[in-house]
Amino acid sequence: MKQFTLEELKQYNGENGQPAYVAIDGVVYDVSDVDPWDGGKHHGNVAGNDLSEAIMHSPHKHSVLAKLNEVGKLER
Image 1 (cartoon, helix red, strand yellow):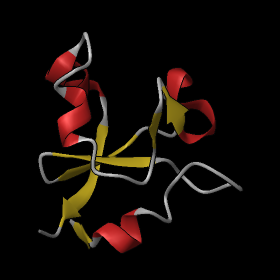
Image 2 (cartoon, one colour; image 1 turned 180 degrees about the horizontal axis):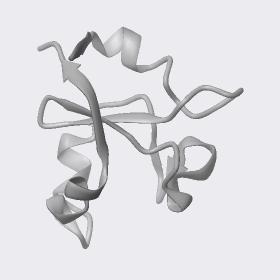
Image 3 (cartoon, rainbow, N blue to C red; image 1 turned 30 degrees about the vertical axis):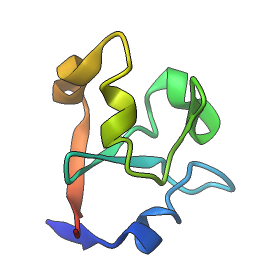
Image 4 (cartoon, rainbow, N blue to C red; image 1 turned 120 degrees about the vertical axis):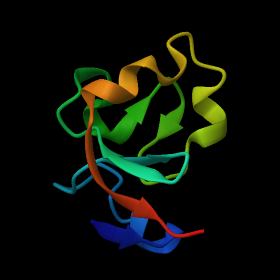
């Protein structure tokens, strides 16, 4: 599985044809085909970032992660 630095992850922001990836608890997920993430943005969150803290404030919390494809790990 690919290892991403935070700097590398920032490239995957869903803009200009780039895929949209987010990191949560050290795992990088592809949200490119998730309709609410169209354009790399979702409820004020931006793809290409570590959203571990943000997901704790979402109504769905971690329940949505099982539906996403894991594409790598975020280096700490």
